[in-house]
Length: 388
Ligand SMILES: *Cc1c(COP(=O)(O)O)cnc(C)c1O
Image (cartoon, rainbow, N blue to C red; front, side):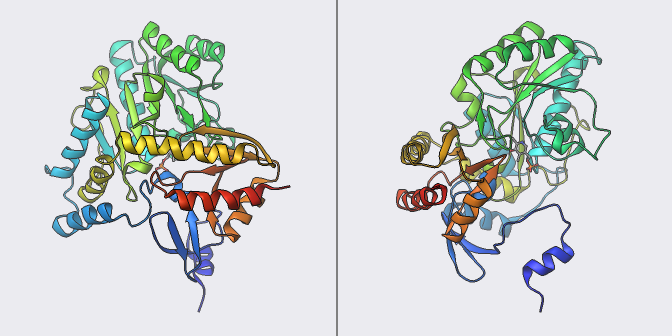
């Protein structure tokens, strides 16, 4: 009989370079492979399993909804999406939510909203969205175009026009990109994830607000990875005192099931009319019930716990040899190691710790409630892994 890995190579499209592990189960911050080998999970399925794997409250919420009605389509009203939308609006001050199934779709919706706003208020030639170099906004052709990394672009051209890229944390470059184009919006991750776990500076974020005010631009925060408590507040923009017009999120909101959310602020709350956007699965009751169980627990105690765990990791690693720098915010950390990151990641895996990569860095995205005892064990493995 062929193994899972062999059948995967044979039947699954070759878009993923997977780690050589077949995950079979887990509980909280522990996961195990098909042979029963246990790992401490510091990757959470790329910032998705917010409170770990098979979290009781989440499993209950999802199971109950699945046993009641799993799918309705958007031809009918249902309760879970309305509950979730109301919670998101009350917690952020944004006004309305469009639900989809992924980060890319949440960003597609944000781009449509920004373009429609600019078309109505400034003219349809004002359609350029300024994003940042090293950003990541998704894999669809348009969100790929929004992504400021050439490596993702080649062989998929022509891309969607109407994007230009400013250098992150370079105020002059941002200012000139806004001026050079007929600009509709600025779209940023407050902490770039795939681009190497790089937070924006306060000064740069302040400049975004200033430029937006001066030019009637829509500010879009892509909180797909850095949101939902990961950076020590509900959304990372809140750490900067920024007031975005549109906030997109996905990954950690669902706690393990696919969901995307595009939150629309006052300027764009009524931008969409029936037919302007849609999704068969968007607002799916099971996904929304899971998200409600996650969001209802994202409170100040959890954020305080995120900060404590973050400080613990940084303090434990900052002076140990073999580390050049640690970047990031909260429980979204990038470790630049002297050794090749792949080598560090492989050592960790062999020694029972799952970590992932971002650019040349080792990326940590643990569950927000990872027990300190597991964190301590994992950090000790990382210390050995980075040793020269
Ligand atoms: C992962 C990610 C996306 C894309 O999300 P998908 O659910 O994979 O489509 C978009 N933006 C950021 C910042 C991300 O980290």
